[in-house]
Length: 285
Ligand code: NDP
Image (cartoon, rainbow, N blue to C red):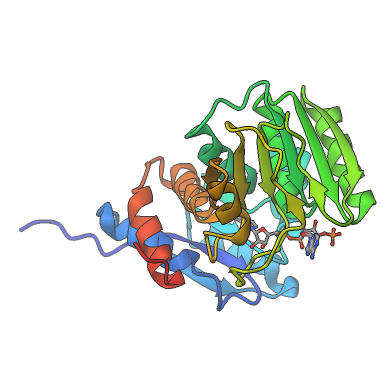
C-alpha cells in the first residue's frame, strides 16, 4: 500500500484587515498547478497579536509567511535575521522559517525589478520615480542595488522624497535626488524608466497621474505599481506613445514567485498566478 502523507506545508499572511487581500488565491492556485501539497492561510492579525502569530508560525513549523499592512516594520523585532535590502528599506513583507529561525526579506522592490529585467538591463539607467511611500522606497533601494545610475524621486511631500534619495545615495552605488512634485510634472526626455509608485489609479482606471509623457524618448519604459486595474490611465497613455509598459499585476505575481522560491526552493508558475489574479480583478484575458 502506498504511504499517504496528510501533512501539508504551511504558509500564509499576517495583516489586518485581510479580507480584501487576494494573495491567498494566487498562491494556492500556483501550489495546485505545480502539484505542491501546501496551504496559504490568510490570517487577520492585530498589532497586539503579531508576536504571538509569529511564534505560532514557528511552533506549527510553517515554512514562511507574508506580512502586509500594518506589520511590515513591526515584524522586524520578532526576527532572527533581516536580508540586506530589507534592512536598508526598513520593512519586511516576506519571512522564511528555517530550523526555527526567522529570516526577513522584502519582495516589493524585487518583484518590480524582476518585471523590469524582462524588458531591459537596469544597470546605468536614469530613473524617474513618482511617489515616496513604502512601495517607492523598496523599488528605489532595489534599483540602486541593481546598478541604475541615477534616481529622481518626485513627491508632493518633499521630506519623504528626501529620505528615499538619501537612502539610495548612502546605501547603494546609485546617485539620487529628491524633487517636489506639484502640478503637472514633465518627464524629461533623457529618462530611461518612469515609475508611478503612488496610489493614484488604484481601483480607478480613469485616475490621472499628474505627469506629462509628451517629451519621453521612444525607448522609454513606463511602469505602474497599481495591480488593479493593471492597465491604468498612465500606462494607456504611455502605450499610445509607443513606450514599453510594465503593470503592477506583473509586479505582484513576481512577488508570489519570489516568496515561493524563498519558502519552498521552487519556482512556481507565474502564469497560474497571473491568470488567477486577472480573473479576480476581472481583467479580460
Ligand atoms: P503609501 O501610502 O506608503 O504611499 C502613497 C504614495 O502616493 C505617496 O508618495 C503619496 O504622496 C502618493 N500619492 C497618493 N495620492 C497622490 C496624489 N493624488 N498626488 C500625488 N501623490 C499621491 O502607499 P504604498 O507605497 O504602500 O503603495 C502605493 C501603491 O502601490 C498602492 O496603490 C499599492 O496598491 C501599490 N503596491 C503595489 C504592489 C505590487 O506588487 N503591484 C506592492 C506594493 C504596493 P504623499 O507622500 O505626498 O502623500
